[in-house]
Image 1: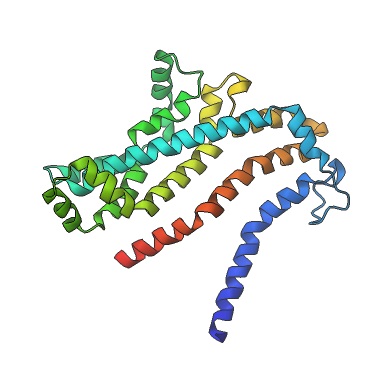
Image 2: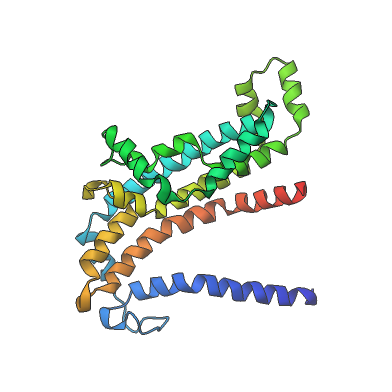
Length: 273
């Protein structure tokens, strides 16, 4: 028992280091303008009206709703499409499978800037360059990283289960939906949450595609808030920080709800090793 105290102490210190920035953010968002950067953890004067200001100055509810819709669409499409491709690489045996899989994984080496302009030109030709569709529809084709991640889980499923189902007359889609997906649920949930976070915090693509404020996601809306309240010496950082809190809290809630699947996924991979 005594030997665990150094471990617990180290974990507690690490927890403080990682949670302090968010705690500071919440504290600063509840301070009046002169006290925002005084580094006092507990505000001398409370200013909850900062949240009222941000809520009335911008369509925050609309931006949050847009972010939820886009993030769920992006996470759902990339999870399903990547799982289908990963199952194909894990289950089927065909000539050139390893070379094709290496080619798919190799696409992760391409910087996003390489495909940014061609992708925009494609969406522009389709007449969708000023809509929310480009923010999630690209995920219909899967993601190399998620394909690799899910494939590793599928490879851990005993092949005898699939062969037994095939003897009973199950088709390939049934093998996928009834056997592979339930047994690899932690990997699918981790993929969903990873992409949910990535889509929620994405600013670059909304900056490229969105023009109408009614279509803004929360990061794009935060850029508009920063332009409005964060300029020159009259910057109202307390309002900007209140918006940052509203942007961050949903992802913290999502992680807390799904953290057991992260642990389960790590434990499963550890047992395989």
